[in-house]
Amino acid sequence: MPAVAWGVGAALLANTLYSVGFVLEKRALTSLPEVSVRRPAHLLRQVVTSPLWLAGSIALASGFGAQLAVYRTLPIAAAQGIFVSGLVLLLLLSSRLLGEHTSGRERYAIAAILLALLMVVLSLRDTGHDQDTVGGGAPAPLILTVCVPSLAAGLYLYAAAERRSRHRHRMPTTGVEYGVAVGLLYGVSSLAIKGVSGVLPDVPALFRSPYPYLLLCTGACGLVMSQAALQRCRASLIVPVCTTVTCLFTAVLGTAAFGESLPSEPLRLGLRVAGTALAVAVLLLMPKHDTAPAAPPPDPPTPPPRELLPHAPHEP
Image 1 (cartoon, rainbow, N blue to C red):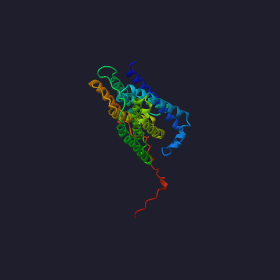
Image 2 (image 1 turned 90 degrees about the vertical axis):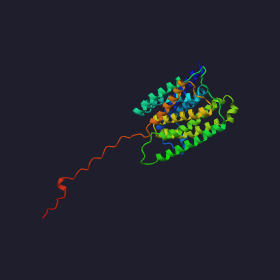
Image 3 (image 1 turned 135 degrees about the horizontal axis):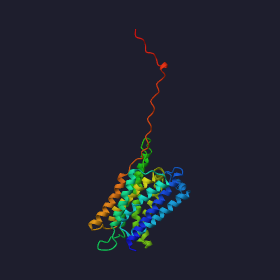
Image 4 (image 1 turned 180 degrees about the vertical axis):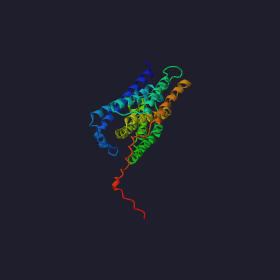
């Protein structure tokens, strides 16, 4: 079987594992006491007591393993276009298993994502003069220059979203702000996974690289931040936002950092760029707030009985 077919299959498997993992974790979190990023040790003690949450975590960890296979066979930009397609399964599972209502705008987004997936897959080529190249490694200083500020930005945005969410009169958030913050962390994690895929099976070289340490940092921070965000926001919106930000971050910066080139054929280049742009448009179309049903207007005051009304004074 061609390498591209293996890569596409591994990407679709990763999508399935990620979607199932997030939905299981969200379902477990709905039955747990409130968790907070301010108490990470308490948060971890809470979630590990849930078998359902542990099953979701195993699914997510397996998705990372499948992602390693993807990055060994597909270019970064193409892989991100396929990863975004996992939003379709996520929205379907969250509707069926979590009872989360998807709006008409989100249903249109599903169709757009399927179209984006088709465009990216059609842009791939495994043989010929314009064969896709898969980058192997990147200079450690360049990776750190890209990843460290991105980690700081993700932590800052999450803290800002936490502060705004504590405002009493603020509209209920859908999770867009949290999704962008966690998406930046997972974008760094995705670049680290790409780096690991290029270094393996040379284990000594792996531990001399920054990749395992970036994975450890993003894994710890992302775990705590994503669980608190998942508990208070709809999975059907926070996960698509997070996924879109992660894919865009990885496609743009990863392609440059690992020296991968875009297709030279105009048709294939147009398909890949348009598919990625369509996936990004999904993020821009997502609503920023949950609209609660409007409260009914108060009843008008009942006038007092006529006999109790004061009499107007008689004019002389």
